[in-house]
Structures are given as C-alpha cells and as structure tokens.
Image (cartoon, rainbow, N blue to C red; front, side, top):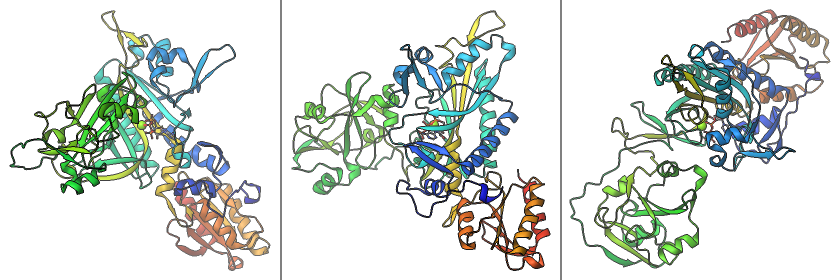
Length: 569
Ligand code: ATP
Ligand code: MG
C-alpha cells in the first residue's frame, strides 16, 4: 500500500478526552475515532489490526471444534422474559420498541438467543455436545464508558456457548475452552493471569477470568505464590484473628462529638482502625429492606458478596439514603449493630472474631466501646469484606499480593440456568427429556486490542506484535524526490508486494523526521529506511521494539523481513 493513498490520520497532540496510553495512542495513531461516548468508528489501520485479532481468535475457536455463526444484535423481549433476565438486567440493557410497540433490546450478551437456537435445532442426543460461537457487536449502556475501547457502550465480543448432556460433559467443554483461551492469549502475546471470578449477571456456578496485567486495569487481582488467584470480587481470605488474652469487657457509651470517620474515631479514642467496626447501611431494592453490613474499620465492604448473599442483582443494592439512616439512628451517621431494629445485619467473619471493639451507638455523637459479637449483637456471619494485599491465602495460609488487570475474557459453567427455564432439552436413552448443561465463554475483542497496546508501547507510540500489526513493514525513503532513493524504495516495495509481506511504501513528499514519527506512532514493527546510501543499494533495517538499526544490502533486508513474516505463529 502506498502511504499517499492511505487514510493516515495521526495526531500530534494528546486529545483531551484520553487518559490512558491505549486510548491516547489509538486516537493519535488514527486507528479509531469517537462517534459518541463509548462508541467508535474504526479507521483502516485500526480495522486491519482488529480483523487480525479476530482471525487469531477464530482460528483457535475453530481448532477447538466450535462452530461459527452470526446472530442478530436485536433481541426480542420475550426470550429475555423466559430466562427471567428482562427485569433483572438493569439499566445497562438498551431497550426499545418497534413501530408495532413490540419490545426489544440490543444484545449485551447472547445466552437467550443461543439457547433458543439450540432448542429449535437440536432434539437428539446424537448432536451433542456442541459449542457455537460468534464474533459480533454487543451493546451495554455502561454507566461510565471510558478509556476508549476498554469500556465501550458498543464493542465487539467473541461469545461461545456449549451444550452438553451432563455436568461431566460440561467439565470437558469448559476445560477445552480454558485451554483454547490460553492459546489465543499466548498467540496475541498478552501477558495474562487466570483468576477465579464471580459469575455476575451471566450466572452459573464456576467462572474464570483472563486478566491482562496492567496498572490501568479496572480489576483488582488477589493472588498468592502458591497459585491461588481470584478477582477481588470473588477472592477469599482467611480472617485475621487478633491474639487477645483480654476478657470481654463491659460495654460503655462514650461521647465522640463530631468524630465520624474511622480515622477520626480511632485517633480520638486512641485505638487502631482495626479495633473499630465500620457499619454501612444499604437498601435492598428487590426486597425493599435495609441491610447493615459490618466490616473491620480498615477494610472495605465487598458489595458483590453482599449482593450474592441477598440473592439480588447488582443494581438492586444501593447505599441507603440520609433519610433511611436517620430512621435508624435519629441522626446522620453513628450507626452501629447494637440494639438496631428493622434491619438485616450481615457481619464480616473478622468482626465476629474481634474482641472489645468500637461501634457507632445509633445516637448522635456517641460510640460504644468493648462491644463483642454474639454477646452484644448477632447477624449473618460471612465474608463481606474485600480481600486485599497482605491478607492470608485461603489455600496455603501465606500473605497474598494484589495487582491490577484488564479483564479480557471470562468463561462460565452455567449448568442448567438457561436451559431449564427455556426448555432447551434433549431426549435421554430412557425416553425422558433432560435440560442441556451449558457453558458460556466471552472474549472482549476490542478490549483486547487496547490491552495489547497497554502492554506494547513506548514514548513514541504503539509497538504492535508482528501477527496483529496493521502492516508488517514500512519502507521509508528519506527523500522521495531523490531518484536513487525513490527507485530503490520502489524496487523493494514491488518485490515485497509479490510476497506475503504486508508492506507500506511511504511515497509522501514530507520531511523524513515527520515520516519517522508517524510510523513509530502507528507502530509498524519493522522499517526499511532508504537513505543516502541508496546508490550503493544499502538500506537501514529498524526494529520498532528494540529501536536497533542495522545497515545491510537491500536484498538482505528483503530476506530478513520475509523470514520474520514466514515465522509468524
Ligand atoms: P466488566 O466487569 O469489565 O464490566 P463483564 O464481566 O461484565 O465486564 P462479560 O459479561 O464477562 O463482561 O463479557 C465478556 C467480555 O467482554 C469481558 O471479559 C470483557 O473483555 C468484554 N467486555 C465487557 N464489557 C465491555 C465493555 N463495556 N467494553 C468493552 N469490552 C467489554
Ligand atoms: Mg466478565
């Protein structure tokens, strides 16, 4: 491709809207352009890379035995009512009506559609197991679309759904996808970690996430050197127990005027934050009741675990209003579990093991000291705290570490969550009908494109791995007006054009520095610079990743890039 015929839309300046490297570089390199928040157009260079990522995913999915289909983004409400998710999914689901007043949504995921397809197409056990997938556009009205392709409202996902006759069969299908995902992310050169995950709005029992390691990731990963690793939403940890020989002391009410935060209270009462119990009030919108969650003062509430305990959807748990809190304690704040009425109490197990601790007194400007679980209050005990760096590994008992990751994929064992209510069944050997046992498997294709950039860039721009780069090599004549440079550049270009090497010839009459900047920014993995030694047939071969430049004959340069390309995996 000749650069003069390409749509090269590089930007010098960082656009205001972009904060993280991948978003900045996708815009600056002219790969994408924003249409509205969370919705993007893909320009030619961006689309080439996107297609290559899709194709690697497609090849590995095909190799696993899965079958590709393409379904619609437009989904009828009736199917979502069958699964019970029309009311459960919440405001992320983009809903609309057609001219006949029939209701639809734009698919954020396709469990209902695939279950419906399979129940209509497959009746016999002979056709099972089956795994069907698609690479298709999804819609989620994210509360905060951000970071470019990382969290869009319209994005591309590879989603697959497996259908088996038994849970053992599902286990096999799940392991097959687990391995396939490893091959995909290995081929995409992503540095990733596999973690245990919560099943969220998709549901099911077991789930793993594939996390691309990155400081800009929105997921916190808790992991241990023994191999345990989990998303923070899911992570377990052993409760920390204070060795205290003290007996349970008498509860006392102490005045704590204007001391509201854990820091204020602990410094005022001269105790550590971990000797205070923090009480947070939520409203469970599904059951229309208040819930008090008590965790150690220096810990955070894990809202996902609260949601799971209450068996409600994520959007059905909200922080209680000031009015709600006033109804409990007749003041703002100072809420605590002792003597509180008309509220469900969830107690983190660490709090249940603490001794003589501080809680709010449900009375303005007062706290209680020497409080003990069991004697002074009770509630449902469980893990309701977020695990964090230094917490004790539930498997080996050693302190764990925390890192950030970008969730690029997730796999779920769904079981019969969709097949049962939607009657997706097969006939067994005994003539009876049984629900199929399902799994589902997603990869954020466009998010993966961002993750690759997060892990592969420098101050000058993107450094695409060779197998997903929009082109393999760019030939840059320092001065295209110079006859020797122009003709050698064209000779190299013509030869590479006849091979499998995807080549750009920068035939623009721009200054050399300008051209170098463009290609470094766009991230083409190799450059052949045709400069002043063109009349000796000598060129410079530059590796974008190492920035190492080597002078060589143009024939050697051609051989070198051909070899590199023929070794692409
Ligand atoms: P998140 O927790 O980041 O919102 P999710 O767990 O809701 O994601 P899944 O339902 O597991 O997402 O979707 C499968 C994959 O699709 C995710 O692993 C992620 O890579 C990708 N994905 C999900 N939401 C978005 C989005 N808004 N923009 C881009 N990719 C997304
Ligand atoms: Mg997920």
